[in-house]
Image (tube, rainbow, N blue to C red; front, side, top):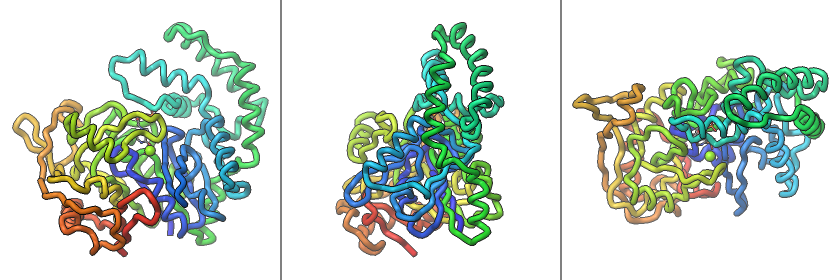
Length: 423
Ligand code: IMO
Ligand code: MG
């Protein structure tokens, strides 16, 4: 079975844990978009691992983990991640592959990402990793791909051409001295040497796996509302985070994908700027952030927290074709007096039951809440659904009804063991 895992909110839903759990049942795990803006945390054997580029399934022996063509790769970060895994005793040789068609993040992408943020009045709050500028170069056709790095002549010509144009922009627009060709060229040829053994035509490898009836897990990064088309634009990331991205970003046809599983937190979080209708008021926000340890795995920034937004997740179900949901971090809602779920919005006397895309409406929308009593016992020890407190079950069953989607997994703690399976 070929399954896509996608975040149903604004990222950080707990995709890392889900992928780690589902990896056991598949042969291949492939990242299809994003880059090291992602931070996927897995707790295994009492140890915490944070992955930015390598699929979270790598901890499972024998699984083949790939970076698809849709991903943007910062080779410096990737090499560090490979070395860290080696140090932890995890062997990846022979089972880690990078698409020859994946685009490469260069120093000018990182710097431009940061400079643009300081220059604009409407900041996006990016991770500053060069993700947006790298995708922009891909689209305007001056990107450098993995396969280009492997050919010193091709790489030289492309880099020369790029720097000619970019250095002028850096100087004139951003008052930045620009970049030396020699320095980047040598540095990146070294990266190419270090990575060459992993680079191959991942799209062919995966299609071969499909022919052989192997199982593939497509690991989405970020979340539906950070999607370049369907997210809360412009406060989004620069890739297709929705399930469709899985086919563009790997070269596996949509007709070969069997199922999409959505991952959502039992509440909502968001890092960076942008509208967030169900955001908690400041004091409660701080309380919940500490309770849920909601600090970014990539940048360490505090995450903004709010109630579960069923309008959003309903839209995610639709956009991604989600047939099963995993609800994460239910335990963080333990011991709350009341719990709210947003089922609609109000703005200027008008009611909205669908996610509003008008920036003014979304920025000022007042949530319509369904309020439910909380539970005062802990969910962490529950191994089965029936062991959950009654009000926690009521909460989940309300979510299931309002979203019209089956909840198949519930996470009540960070470790693999703290997971309830409903099938
Ligand atoms: P994972 O995979 C949460 C957010 C940034 C910013 C916006 C654009 O861990 O869920 P970018 O650097 O991508 O251009 O920033 O997107 N963002 C994420 N938020 N989780 C992520 O990834 C994110 N990756 C990017 O905070 O608001
Ligand atoms: Mg994350």
